[in-house]
Length: 431
Image (tube, rainbow, N blue to C red; front, side):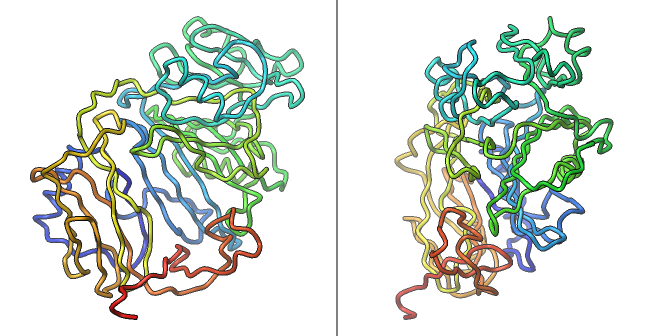
């Protein structure tokens, strides 16, 4: 399930009884975050535009969040996070052909190579820096418990991040690696340390703005990766390394390391209900760059093919008053894998009928009331899936490139509300 986090003055009015019931049912049907106050906070932001949370697999959460910085620039960011002790996923090293030879291929190809070998990859992100002519990684590579690439002789100071055989994180310098390598299951190089013992320790203070990638560990051993799009003004400005370090600290890292950024930055995830992964960020080269290695998120539970929850579409959308919106649903089993929807027992509802109506084919008709309302799909008396739709009158008109970076220079302007795109549609009866 995907639930939009919108930070605005109005929320859908739902009775206390319905709220309590819905909270219990959503928790049991599909683990996802509820609408409310954002759980991301950083002093780098002058305001937040949006936050979207998607459960990719049990315990693995993708977040996309957008904020305006203190210089009035827009930043589009992504995180992938999980707790090794609780999640049904593990990290694995991705390589070209999912093999042991040095080379280069895109994150997409590395992901598909691993899937072809039977690995249930549900997300992936590029990792260490490398020689762009040969594909030789700059750091160590441990894949499935075997070292397939040693520290580069000219970069013995390179750091590493990895997971032990029990799935818990391990990181540090070469001395730490050598002392623990018999217990390391997966490891890749780290360019530099950004945060250590909860404090920013980055030493690169250059003003270069770029797409950035980093990996961090929180005090509870949660592992999270950050990708910030850049070189895509006005969609996303990019960060310096110092800003990246501060953001990682603000996101809760007690330790964080810098990964390969720039044109290499690529994040892929499996959209709920889909069978293949897709790139979620916007690589600054305008294409996917071949890289030396990647981190793969492997789903541990096998699909049982039994309907457990539903992923509703569209999600994270704002519409003008009096709009009519067709909602749809895709079935998921407990592992997050796609399954068929039940042939009976499904019904659509709104959390607050004062916003309009929704028929049993999922067609929502706004009556013009502004705010947010939860769209729900019920199955045999329980909420199987939900999302929020926002109804708002535009408060600004901006370049389409602000919200759609691939739109091109001549795409014109689009309506927005508090920075979010407003889809301008209305009920034909009001024309």
